[in-house]
Length: 445
Image: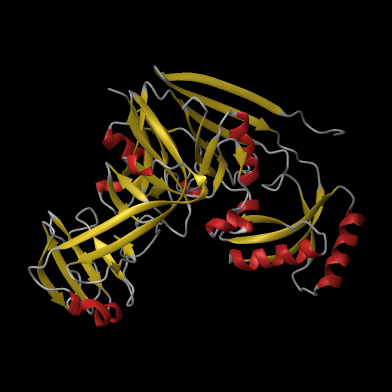
């Protein structure tokens, strides 16, 4: 491009420990040339931004979502000539009159197609390194910084993990599947992607795919009872199981009923009280008021009970060995699977806006030889790193030689820690965000 600054393509490599390498990658450029674009609307909800993008697509117009301060601007074009922007504005106004339609004059911002990008990659040898999943303060709820979590666990390095509740009584509750040391702490969310790890024949093995849950309670002489969730807030029509990892109590409101199970036997049934103590050697079956009306009569003190919580691979784009996994964290969407690009975010209830917008990103992938790739891309910092769309993130994993990969929680949560220090540039002005869980890297023993 005429008068454009040169593109940067620098990579710096350092060895953290035998079998663990850190790459710092700088790509792209800052471009301060003046351009024009059309602002086609601003939306706080992704579904409204999606609707605007679809309406533009039907008219063969490409709308780009740009995230800023909790909302999305849908913009069209990057024109060097203002007249072309005026023509586009008139074309869009004929589709649907909008008071918010206007021309913007911009220089460098996160919509820049040339970046820049600041990328960090951890490359872990599966014969020398293991990857585990840990939750903040070793429970199923609560938050702490990735740096603090990694330091407590004594990890060589770490990246932040999956999606989670950012507020409320159960802040830090994973919004997706979570398994730690073989114990399931949270169920899959809307069939979204997950990554799992286990050890076999002296190597760290990884699994990628979309997961569901088969969750049932078996009582003698009764039909199986479906369970709605695990270690999360309970609704009035739901049955939720609470394990000791969740909290000292179930944190439920008064109403419904809670069944105490110890050593596979019902030891107590508590009605209408809520927030029952969770037995250290058992679990609670908690029923909201409507679920209690339908099922409570089936439970008797002294009766034997069996709980079946089984992870189920969904569709053809999932490895089949999930029963071997010791550590699992959910995220989404799936980016690559066995060498094939996966660009169907709607299958995981992920919006086109989230797919197309540039954000800070955290992701994990694997090469055909089992080498693990833990990646962060900084964003929302126009002169340092603009962030990536999920398509751009997929391109990055292909450049790194991955055959399977998936997206994790990003935005202000994106963090990479090495030797106890956060080495990327978090987008929150306050610095490191308090996150729920993390992927930790250790030397294999």
